[in-house]
Image (cartoon, rainbow, N blue to C red; front, side, top):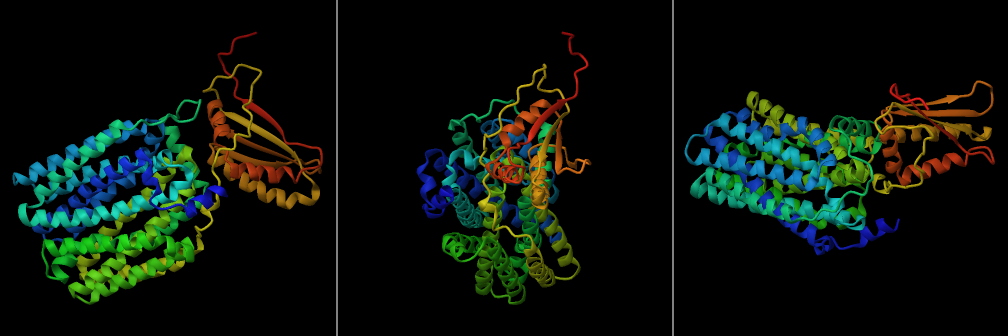
Length: 536
């Protein structure tokens, strides 16, 4: 409780007092400026290469689609590898790709397909490092500063969008998109340097890291049995899939609806970011009055109304105003979703859990533009924009059945209350499968409550690594129950001892209060016998 209180009253700027976070934040700001410059340059270059709405929309798809397939593996890698080296490698590859695209464009050898291909490669690099960037926030700031750090990252993203889009517009007008791509390549130098100097603290664990494929399975299993993370995903998809129409068709809005050039396009881009920055500045006051669920619902409806205005009234000044409102609504939903995802996850699976959320987020940004681009092709731009907006309002009302406001009350801190089991026979770390059975003698008057709490405990067991869980009743007629769950190896069970959270420890304490007086749960461990065990 004290941590939450401290977080709510701390200054949003206080994380910048932390040296590591300050330099990483500045490096990310510079890199994001380059990324937004690339987005503007790639979008406008595609408009000059082809008039096809589908090809224009595919620029956004090429950036977002890799994440749909790569985020979960990259989340697993960032959990089992050194995140600092992992991030350095990804940024080096992205810098070289941006340099290649710049040289290809400057020399006049780029066409629409090479532009899409290299943008796709940059999307792969972005997808590889995205979960790691999200996961290192709790490593470099204390828990009480987590909310402020997320807010600063959101602010930096939108400041970089304004700066990047404006710089890109000037450079495109003066030197073309090739110069923009070369500038993007240069921005990677700063972030690689900062990562090289970061002295990352080792993780607090005595166990070896999981294997690549088991780590992926564990991440998926956690997401499957985490109602808090699932609710975050449902609410996010309900917004981002339909709201992606703004990014997908923005170049065509500037060129066809407003009859403008690259300066108009960059001005619209900047207007979205200005609205987002204003929203971030007002967010503490707004969040004090409305819950996370209310903010996401209201922001979705406001976004849809502003997008309809943009589609029907083709006046530059009004388009700038309405798109700034869209930017404010977009960042409100994005911030709420990120906070919800972070608070739904413990540290040990944070990268993988975030990668699952981001997979659906980026999938929405990849598939949505393709849908709206096709609707615009077979109808017109205003029809596509209005269709997406009406569907967004319907989705905002429908997804309210998955609330997010309770996620910040979850305590994922490792409890450490489980004693490490000491087997009396030789058991190797990779030996398995392992079955753990726990017998309970329940007070007959508390059986209904016991069964309800045990179902919650079963989900917790599966989140922490169990691939099977069951609760059985003794047929003798006594209120005796046997819980058993299975993990793949003895090492996986030892990991469960490190992963058990304070939240789940409190649940186990509630269950113990329902047992017969002077009885305790009786725990037994079983392991598949080793065929090569020596006789004693």
